[in-house]
Picture (cartoon, helix red, strand yellow):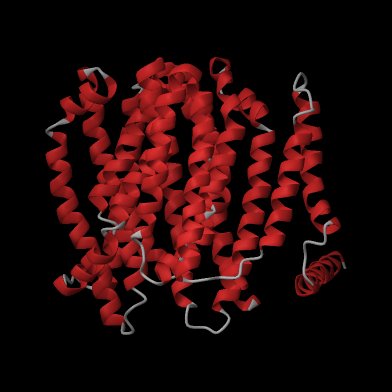
Length: 491
């Protein structure tokens, strides 16, 4: 069984290292943005990004999800190539037509969403970059299903470095504001899309199979309402905050949310890039359910470890990374980390729904949670602002993950390691509670003390006998291996 973990860990590590560098660069740009953009500008940028996010779900037709499934449904290389080519051509043609139509309504989007028609040119740039982002994501999905994690990482880093340099030029030197951010994205993405398109279609050939497309759309269409509900659940609070409290508070909340998502980028995203395809590869193995259970435990362990680290260092991160005018944004980070941690647990617990093709339960679960989320946001945001939004996020995600576990276990029962998971959650809560007693008057002292708390995490796992005998054996074997390598190098 540990052979599965070795392969999964290898590709997750490669994806994770690339994403870590990419996000490190992204967070390097936070001081740049907060220096040259006011909190209100940052709020505008956030609302533009979110609008592009939801429209991309609609325009993309869930092709990435369908590609993950149907690539592994066929055995011959020709059929696999036809799946890839059909998905790319459909997205390019249909998505391109829809985006051209959307640009004609840019004035309407600006008036409705930002209450200022003068922002229409930003929406045109948004729609162009959004369409290119859909193609880029689909092509990166091709690399994922082909286990080309190194090429995936290289391409992602090329895009990130290029966009970063262009961002510095357009935002700091030319000072084009929000427009410069979109210019950077469009130029950088054009380069990598051109390379990937030629590279992929050269190997697959140009195919368009209606029967394959029909199967893919039948599977993927339920992901569209799922995406809409996910948007409402995750991002609708920004629009409500903007409506009741203006763009400035939206900017504070957006910064807090971005920093809270570090845990997602470090653990969840690289893991999902491998896992959502890998679950189909091993489903026919006798030990498949055992693998799903073990992986869920390790995944939650890493999520909690990184998440609590972000939560306890919230004040210090905002102080160091952002302009002083944004400092209030740190107050929502711990709650948002908790909410996102609960939400992203669905990756471990939705396995049964994906394996059995019951993807319709995903939008149902998200839909119920989204309705509750909107009702609570409308109730609490007018009076409590972004703190009310953060508490609502946590409660809504509890509802969501509860429904996912219920439906998935009913359809495809997996014996998860609930006792070990409870130990992880207990240690996480204990470390966060201890961190609240540490004063933040001196950043060096507070960071040092909180890092000391993080060291206690693995120690407490050992004290609570979290590990199994098999895991202990592999850990000791790994330690002996690295010690031996170190001795050889020293000699």
